[in-house]
Length: 572
Image 1 (spheres, rainbow, N blue to C red):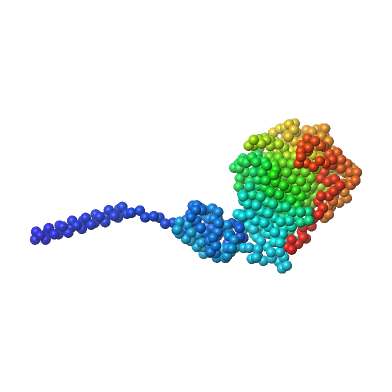
Image 2 (cartoon, rainbow, N blue to C red):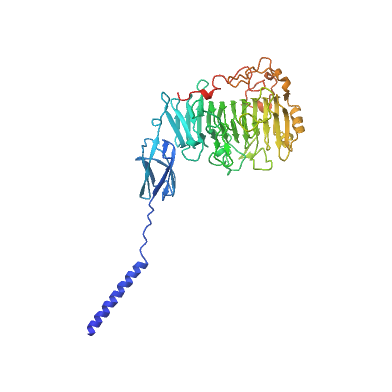
């Protein structure tokens, strides 16, 4: 009996020790690694061109490009960026339709939706037409676009830093409307050359490069697509954290490289640009928009036609240009902002008198700071050791109304014509040897806090002719009309031609023709002489001339411009 009790106690003790051992193991298990299994929930877009970017959405997609691989239809893609919920990749050459596979951290996920790459051979072109190559997203490779192919821009197309886009003479690039934006953000097609990237678009008079609407002949109109944008590293007098204008990605940042080079834009036509951007407030790109572009960039012989916004827009920078033509612009022909300091010679604008913007269409609109600021700011800003000086425009001709200028709203659009030259928000500009004809107002100078633009010399108008203007000179804000009048008429070789005397200018009979303009003055015209010389126009950039306006005896518009793009067949 005692032996039985003793054995029972021994068994009970052994069972207790086993229970304690198991309990300890339960309370202190060995740590096991957490396995994050990736998943793919979406691909945007599901169809894109080789060389463009797509975004893969999901969960647990990793945190770094190292150790993350992506294949499209079995072909490895270049990984651009990685976050736990999003991977951006470049569609690789040779990619075929199929699922997207992501491998990260030793785990793999496959999309349930197939991705389809697009190349020029898979886009249907009209019978007998050139093949079509669609471009979208960010193109992470240098490319050459050929005149044997028509290129279509879908959404904002970016050429990022360290890459070069070369466009051959005679090439046609067509911008699609916001309804074809593959990102789903309703941005019209546009081409943006970013900082440290380059555009080599060197057309010829016989074979200009053409940016135009993607719509068929007869269906094109103002603002069908976005426009052409160059972004450089030349100084801008705005805060570095400010977003770039008109919906272009990135911020101003603070660069001080006035000699920066964004490439060559030469013998180029830009038609039907200026689409409304889905931004707050609503904005529009210009036909050619230059943001901080440096003086190493070559820009000449550019025609902007039927822009739904401005024709040419400078936001800071130091780029120079010659032979610019704005044709039937909806808003302003020349807009200057953010401390632009370059040189421009030979610019012409021909307006459609029945079309104006609701904001009031101007020839020049020059300003120096943002619309939400209530006070003038400094016009001349030293940056990174380089002192910005005022921009110089010389030998410009703007033609609006051939008859008496109309001061009421235009037939098409909700606005009216405004000023030939509108200088506001403490702008600083030198404008020489130029002719402005047929505007309700000639020169309007406006300031919020003081008239120092006139008294301090940052505004310099010389050799300027105002013809057929209802009100030649106007002051606004704290600048009085008397101050503007005294400034313009005193010792500056400026001239006002009344509507009753415009015949004395001896302008060409086809100056105002919208179908076949020829702005060359007749022999004996007073604008063929009388140019101011020396000073700023003595710079090596400027061609020495003795005439006022953009034309002497040669029509530099001949041969490369187009006045009937509505009926031009760009498919062949």
